[in-house]
Length: 70
Image (cartoon, rainbow, N blue to C red):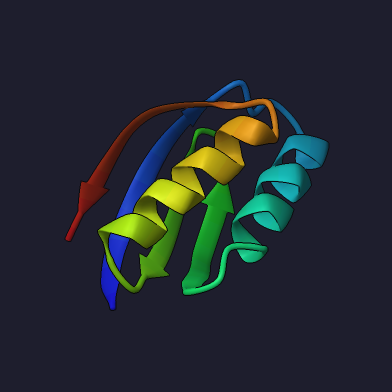
């Protein structure tokens, strides 16, 4: 699995954290390490899983500013 960090804008409160956590948790092949205001750290199986995580966050109403791996 690859570890990624996703920069997310629009997260301002605990509700936002819960919404993003739920969105990422629903993606098969993604494991959350942490969700903080402005960022998500997760482990993903491959690049298609990364794109699914990105889409899930955006579908929850937040903007993905960037994804880094490592």
